[in-house]
Image (cartoon, rainbow, N blue to C red; front, side):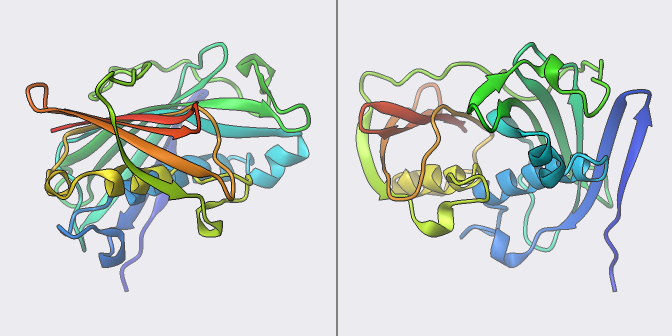
Length: 254
């Protein structure tokens, strides 16, 4: 029976977490590649498990009255993992910003070490009682890292809604979209993005993906999905709106 390992490597306050995985058939799309929502699940689970194993579990955070929520993510898919492939996810925290944790990712083939996906993300520290964002300096459950590295993926930043964006679809938030934080899980947005694309774009093997989570989506709400496609720039912009309020903004490049 194959065993998948997890381990930490650290130098002072700088920890790197490694998690071996296998890509299963049910995690892949019609083209047998890891689906976008499953990629988002995998990296988020790795980030959570990194903190779990360092005594910063969901329950430990809740006991302190705080939560950590993903804010922005950016990925470069050098070669999207495929079904039955054994992969290793490497993730680490970097030097935080004033109001955001910074976390990077590298996914590679466990056997050949071939790079598959590179990514960067930012996370917010939230006071659960006041529902307010807190300065990262207030988080004292671990010594803050000071590592800073170059990232082989698009830079994080604002994503503007193009003037020519058209309504592509409208989708309700169902019970199965909701996670333990009471709102739609961040990985579900990946499915919303892909499902909103015209069929011809679903066959594209995208190279870059960025998403900003702007306002939470809760059970019973409807998300209107707007899209714009620029063949010259090889870019698609997908924006989710709750009435006039932006829920999320994303970009796909091919």
